[in-house]
Image (cartoon, rainbow over the protein chains, first blue to last red):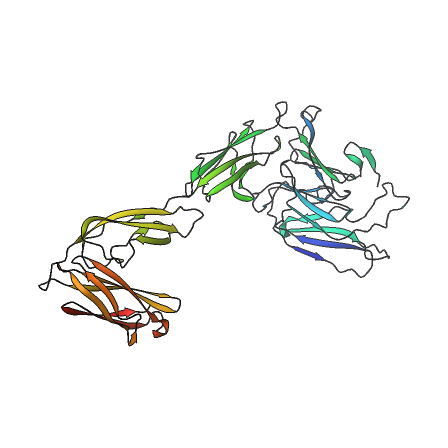
Length: 176
Length: 319
């Protein structure tokens, strides 16, 4: 595993047994124009990347568009992946990087373009997730509920904010 | 959650996938991140790459230029050049080529690779080669020394080779040796570099002329030269008694050898006869307690031969 040029990982203290927590992780991000730092896509919640010009109705078709590669993770993904363009990675230049989080409380940073770089540039696990929240009403019967919301990246302060849930003992408390 | 089943995995949720720069990133409930996009070189297959070095094998300190070719030539982006896990630098792909000049590698076998970043149209790729780098030969400079007169021992005046890199010199004959009379006598040196990983050992030779000494009126002239060293708590004194005269010195004997007031052992030493133009080496020891390394002192030598005696005194610095 490679490490980001990072590097703080500060957790807000929890006073309960099962806790929803938030963390901010300090990374080193230069400014870039094609970033997708929040869900869905921008602070206006448009769900639309209006600067996407490569995919068109002409080239997205069965012969020209398809699966490029897959990255295996340690848990289910509820959160929208996020994207930073031209992120400085030691010994790897300035590749585009996609950030993805799992319900197992792990945050990954993968090369967004190169199938040959399968290992994440960086990853961190924030602790054992809450596994007691599954209910009969849950359509997915989630095995764990760690990170289930999309983080936010503030590139100007080199920070990734992420909310997650931990298991401490038998009592559950939710907090945002 | 509004979950639904689709081809990306067991379930996806209602948050949209990430669409950016020609790719679609989808996380799923099968613990995967799946990346969709325009297939490489639509209709022409994936990118192909090759990596070449200007010189292979090369020598240490020899600058190399690495060239990565990416096909189709319309591919854009950057190529990162790696030496194993270490980055050598990156270069932009222009017309299907990325070039990194001025690459300097240590001696040995190197697994070099070029990693193409990919772009919005073409997927990334890699190419590799094994670069063999041999050790470099240090340059030894050693001019032929000026002629010496018989009786004078070799010293740093004659044994003064230099090398292009740091290291140590071992001369043959060694310093302190008194050469016989004659022209074109060979001197050699073996150089061992400090950096034995990247540089080879090297050797060089030169020649020296040894002129006969003018014979004194008596026909016998004994000249004493010394080499001092400290070994095992003792100071070792190696004396060379050369007869620079034209007649044989018979029954030569050393009767006194001292550093300061400390007498060397064993004494006396009978050296026998030393013919004109010849020499004999005798070795003595003095306890190391006579003085610390670097201390100044004096070495006095007295001896006799049939029909005469000889004495020598010199300022010395204790080894």
